[in-house]
Length: 238
Image: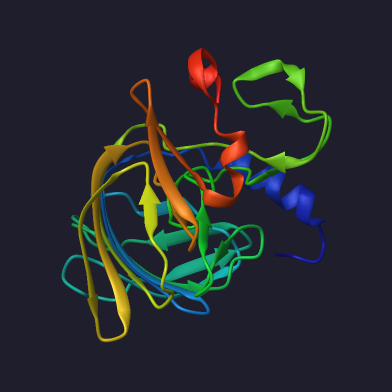
């Protein structure tokens, strides 16, 4: 970003100007997790003739290439958490985004995964604030200023179909808010197929991961933290 303005000023300016003018119908994600995260994300946009497609993607992840449905390279700009893809055709078809990086706020390594749905580790339409400061207005509850710094907790404005191929070098189980439809070991990787329709995708993985169903609610937690798993009627508040 320009050295003439601060990071906070840039974020404020971008988030005010970059409201999404399309939504994503479908994500087709091929993601590999070793000591870093590498991904190819195929995006089916609701509008295919825009001159610009704006996305939010955490700045830890560096975009290497963007192509359209015909595999023609598209020009793009990545500034902080904000990505702009430029389209020169009448029908872009798909937006294919290739990127890699090591996240710092959460994690995706051979040791484990913690990637919540409200964390922009895959491209989200529009320019959004990723991090909120103390005193900022709480998204959706403007009358309640935030008491401490936190992530903005924004998810997709409209549900999308997710088709995900996840390849992990680490030897741990994986859970998601979406459905795990297949898993296999191949070429030194744990491979997972994940499907579903949602306003975001959460991925969790660690060697101690267990899943329990209590009163129809699926609880994902660590076997080392069973004392904090709710019992009885308070499960809905967990």
